Length: 268
View 1 (spheres, rainbow, N blue to C red):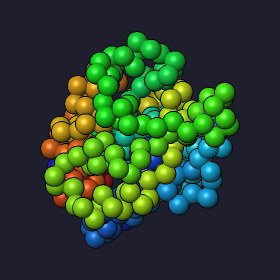
View 2: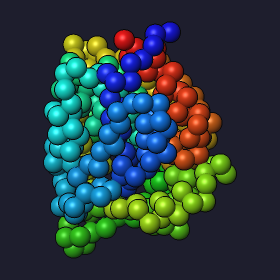
View 3: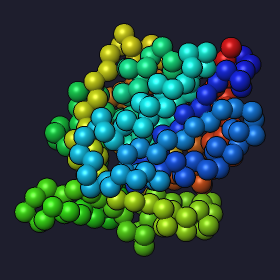
View 4: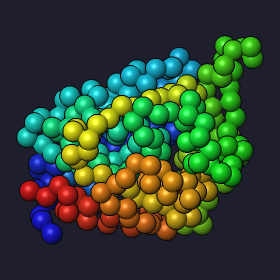
């Protein structure tokens, strides 16, 4: 297994729906302690972003903060992209458009869609992913910011249901659940449901892509993850005993997996 030069490697962390850069605070601290450069991105309308998520209806606008980060990284640095949950859509896009900069992509309980497919417009794919509705679909509350006669603008899991959906593992620290109850924000409904990403074997397909499967995940059940992995084959699949947010429920295990994958696929 190769050695990784921390001065040459740049970890870029992309959060999932309703979350923000804050959800990676433990992972960031551990990677920085190893000497790595780490950037956690707040996508538009998420985390500390000043943008109102109800105004974000276009994936390009939503994803622009990640594009800005990747544009600013020097060519001398090798990027390891980590995407959690819905953040995998941003990874799929970046792998196609920043192929020359990315050494490895890691999907953590990622929402994967085939090229040219969205969860909303392709009912067969959606039904295959979710043969039984998960707690996410039970508790996701749509917000009609433009009035009930118009499509929903955002979606949110109310704080009393966050534990059941995202943080169901008993190993999730109570303080992290409280943090999430304070920090989670409504997510753009249109971006979440109708984003279509186009990618090719010639670009996206040249980058090692690893899926970290969360084995006790209630939000994105293991069978759903397996269905997505089959539809979007990965270079490697790694399993961790964690709920939907292993950054909190399996912090050390996730960190060890990230280091191992970087040494295997992004070593100097």
